[in-house]
Image (cartoon, rainbow, N blue to C red; front, side, top):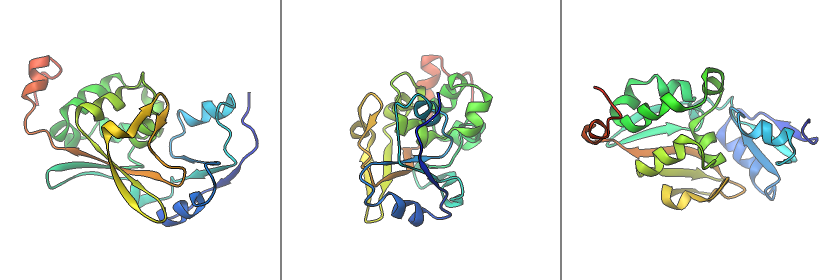
Length: 190
């Protein structure tokens, strides 16, 4: 099956992407990796009028430590996180879970934020960010808001993201030690 007809935009800035979402009444979808969205479009489960490709927005591709938090941008690919020493140190649970996430081609294109917005209950990363007590940073053209992860997932395949918002960042408290993971047998050593 093929997707229903849709328009396509590829903005170069976050503000341009947010402006495209503004006032579209939920008829738009944001795509980065598309590993979940494209199959849903092909089966016509999802039928956006406008597909907004954020891959040119380089400012959203990062993961780093800021103070006592690990921050991960919307364009950070699964592969970058799986291979990151920063992730291994700051969030050992995420590092361990990446052994079970998809396969190479999906990890090369897919993003953590896209995965979280998909909110698949069978996916590993929603469970990881819940356990890690993450905060989701959502942006619209009018405002920025931070949503505790416990309020972000509202149902299967459903999040608290408004129609005019993009999940731009995930903030996770840096793990003070990896002692709990060792006790659970999830890590051999750091």
